[in-house]
Image (cartoon, rainbow, N blue to C red; front, side, top):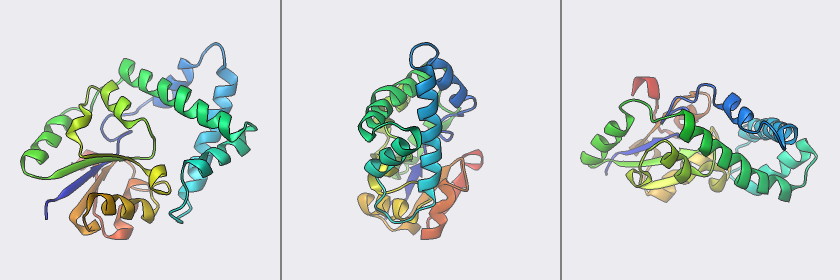
Length: 199
């Protein structure tokens, strides 16, 4: 069986230092305060759902929780998240960030060795974010976002579902990330974790 390398995106494929502050600054002007409340609510909801391991927590539950915390409707939150927040994030990445030094060459080397490579991110808009970082999305066999798989890392169900999609056992894959407490949840299902600083 070919070895499978699963990469987190934010903080792993690039150094996300000051990302939150830069996204906040990108909202200066119209809609600043409402977006600040939504961003704070989004982070709080994400943190709360990370503690759940049901395998059934997707975008609908996520947007409903953000709505409850922000006082907005789930429909409003969904529109803001997809058409404002994710767009702003990609724009900030394109303006201020680039791929982690050497990471693209390492991914190409893995593929040349016959390994399978994919992305597993807790956020959506993966293809546009990779393009913003000047990383060719076609380098990856799959671009997976964990809410579509039923939860958020470190939920065991997220890693197991990713393996089912790829068609491998957890022991045949390696999770590469930047946060042991989140990406390192892979070890709970028998999938080794390697911090990007040691990769």
